[in-house]
Image 1 (tube, rainbow, N blue to C red):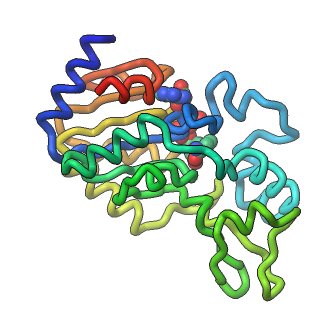
Image 2 (cartoon, rainbow, N blue to C red; image 1 turned 45 degrees about the vertical axis):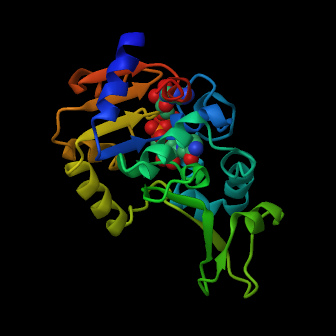
Length: 238
Ligand code: CNA
């Protein structure tokens, strides 16, 4: 492991166009559970699996239950950026990192100071009335009991891409462009099973594909460097 960390350190030092592609595993060390780890949301007991609750149909048909889960598990507003978020922000500031493409909706990259963050699945920090489109922040949703309603009486929906919904085309286009022209692509904290997001890594055409994940993923075999471990712990050694 120490050799791999050393190699990664050298690659980072010699790169100035790094793109990071991440998922829920980036935020577990901030106390936000992912979906697929042993202590992830899939292994906790709910009446439905998380991907059913976080689907468009469920939101429409069982809005109160959706918001119960969402309040409990997704609106983790007290979480703070960990060493991985901070290191990525540092690299961007130093002109090494061009963009972060994330499947996370927690806003922790921006909280760490990162500026160019493509949020493929949206953000809990943006919420809109489905009737008049008025904006509401996450604090408003947090303090609302039950289903959050707009001043106009309309239902407020988080700007989060639910299962069955399409991704924002502009965000995809920017993500593809960044990944395609990156000199190094670091993939971290993602099981790479949620599509179309996971497919974006196929646009990388460089020779420094790095994978930092606790568990094995389908991309391990084609990565140029694989580090199995906790991303915050690993990044704090870079
Ligand atoms: P996932 O499918 O739960 O996979 C997470 C991966 O991260 C697993 O392979 C773990 O082994 C790995 N992992 C967990 N902790 C660490 C760690 N500390 N260091 C390195 N690796 C770790 O999550 P994905 O993001 O791949 O799945 C996509 C879904 C989960 C997206 O739609 C997200 O929106 C959604 N999600 C987001 C959050 C968040 O915003 N923080 C939380 C939970 C789920």
